Structures are given as C-alpha cells and as structure tokens.
Image (cartoon, each protein chain N blue to C red):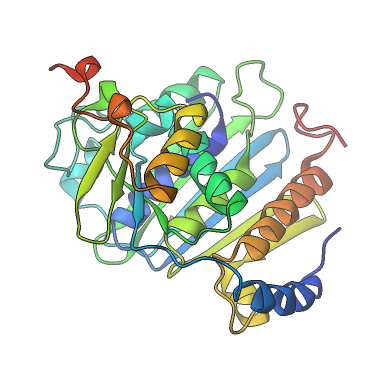
Length: 186
Length: 123
C-alpha cells in the first residue's frame, strides 16, 4: 500500500465484513508518534485466529486462503520503526492500533484520507462512522450521525453533501496536521 | 474552516437538485475493494465512477465488495443491470471508466473489450 489512507480503507473493509454498525477512526500526534486507531463493534475475532492474525496465510474468508491486509500494515509500520496491536473480543468488536514515528523517513504518508472516507460513506450509508484528528489541543471530529441529523430529508450519499464532507475532512487535515506531518503543507 | 451550519444551505439546494437528477435506470456498480483491489488502484477507479455519474447527473449506486479470487485482474467492477445481468470489467483505468459509463450506463451497450470475457482475460 502506498499510503495510510489505503490501509485505513482496507481495515475498515474488514470492519464492514464483520457487520460493524459503528466504526471509529482516530489519528493522533502523540509525542513523536502518529497513532492510528480503528475501532469497530463488529463480530470480533476468535482467540485462535487472533494469535496468528498477522500471518498472511490466516484468514476467515473462504474465497481464498490468504489475508494480506493486516500483514501488509504490520510490515509497513514496522519498516518505519513502529508497531501494530490488535485487540478483539468475540461478538463485541475489534480495535487496531498502529504507532509510527512521525519523522521516520520510511513512515507512509497519510494519503488521500478524505477520498477514503467519502467512498466508504458512498458504499454503505447505513453505518455510523467517526473520524477524529488530534494534535495536542487542536482537534477535529467528523461524525456521520451528526451530518445525517443536519441534512434531514437528504441522503448522506447526495453529491453535494459528499463533496462538502470531502472538503471538510481535507480542511481538517490541513488545520490539524499541517506542518506536523511533513507531507501536509499549510 | 467549514462549519456544520453550511449543511443547512446544502440541504435546501440538494432537495431542489434531487428533482432534476435522472433515475438510476436500474443499474448498480460494485467495485472490488479488498486488499488486492486497493493495492491495484481500486479507490481512484471507484472515485472515477462516482465523478462520471455525477457529471451526467445520473443516480446509480456505487458500492464496494471484497475479493472474488482473481486478484491479477484488479481493479475490477461489476455493472449489474435491472434484470440482474452482471458484466465484469477488469484491469480498469479512469479512462476505461469514462467509456463504460458513457456506453454501458448511458447507452446500454456493454464495452466488450474491457470485460472478463475479453481475450486478455484468458486463465
């Protein structure tokens, strides 16, 4: 994967497959690390699978015998001097956390996170998704439940609404991470 | 910085514009968005479908699905018509997407050379 936004898209696909109704994505600058957390209330992962979750030949799917998503994330994060942790409780949900040194030259750039969120909403408008960006005292929170309330009578998939969401997230990224994540300029 | 208050004006405008958008003509588009698809460039392909349809003010749902087991043919998309007939397009690019929307969605003509049945998809 070229950037973190593609990893986020990939992991959220797992949450959707796990029938999650609520998906929370958080990106925080914590000391010298960029911390990515994806939390869902899907069906969770059994202890047996969880033990080998980063093994590319472990998957719950039946269409193929490989599950590359988490294994690729771990490889990319560790290559940049970071680490990944997965916690899951069967029938409760799963939490994926990745810590990456912000200034490591091998850290993957954030990428087009706004496009990832936009397309996830378009693909499944029934789920509730939040995106939280945190850098010290600066925070930005996006919540599809709040948006749906504001646009009462209009689908969140509506083109004008989706374009607004795309721009809102992009502005938030620049505001919160501009100049800190060196790939994002103010 | 944008504020949620702006959504009220967007809501009013969207309600007006909904009246002029064309019906979905029974089509549905499904993009392969598993790890293999994403790594092969499925996200810009899905975005290209969304933008092409919006350009023409056509309402067609564009959704994602997982891996169908032919990762080497990604990025892939299924165009499903009102009768449930599925056409699978493979190795997509934004340029191919433009032609698929124009020919298949707008004019009802399948773009055979981009489908899984074309000669380039011999297993």
